Length: 381
Image (cartoon, rainbow, N blue to C red; front, side):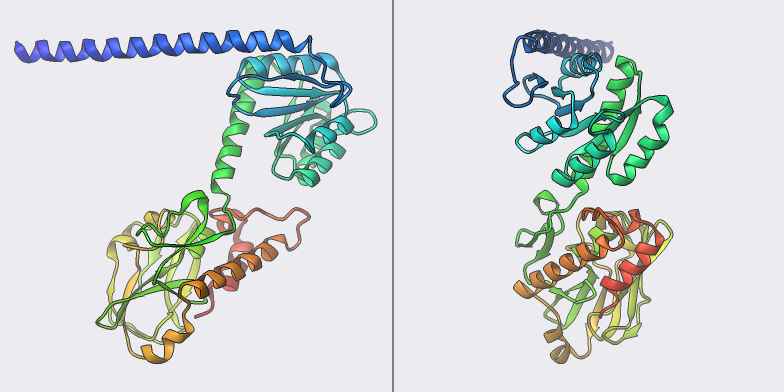
């Protein structure tokens, strides 16, 4: 009986806690909506013509993001302001592409929504200009049913998506929510082209998605790392540059214990999406141990390429001659920086808009890029 009473008490406590939290959440949402409604009403009275002749602006507190909408129909822009502002977005609207470009030079936006068919400067031209001036901004084409093919064509010029009009409030909000999730995911995966030597034992997880090299770790030109022990053995794995280019791996094919290798010979391989990347021995010697856990589950490499995520242990046979060819400290950073520069050029080949460096970029861009990229950056011993 006592146990039943205790369970009932716990259940009532949990229910009461949930009810309080839900009431507070709804109250907070009500306050925010009232503030946004007030901001929307006051925006009609404000004059922003000094920035752009047709500019109307709704600023809300703690916005989800900032949107610039371009359309030559005032009623469409009014709909954007009302729907998005009440949903927590700060919104600027203008009636021409020229005005939009002027604002882009002085203000930050997450999205630009542009109508496809406008006089003087149409949506295609707006899209091209926005991506030239601010390639970090996502452009969405607003189009009628008869212009879908043209809207899709705009995506070749950098537009991230398109939405057909007329659309309902729910349709627009659902579209913007998905667009924001995609943008957030992309930004989180994009890598800052910086290299940092770490000394905290978390070499594979630097802040901001930077490339990492733990202090004291040796790096080969083919992007394998080696960590020497006092007995002359070395743990070997793929470094952070390789791990980030490949992204989430399905498996690591371990070398057999007892295998004798020379520098530059195939040692192990990594697979992702049925594609294979070969890695080559940074040192000569015999494989005396392998990391069976990593062979069974390669996912930890996505978070940290170093520490316990080694692939095998090699008993070095010619360390005196071979260690000088490996990079450590500043020399390792210089190798990473050189290959980051090469990677930028590699990703730009045959493209008007270079791809951003982001986690899993080789797997994302398809098999031909994977094959060329893995040979370009990992085939050196």
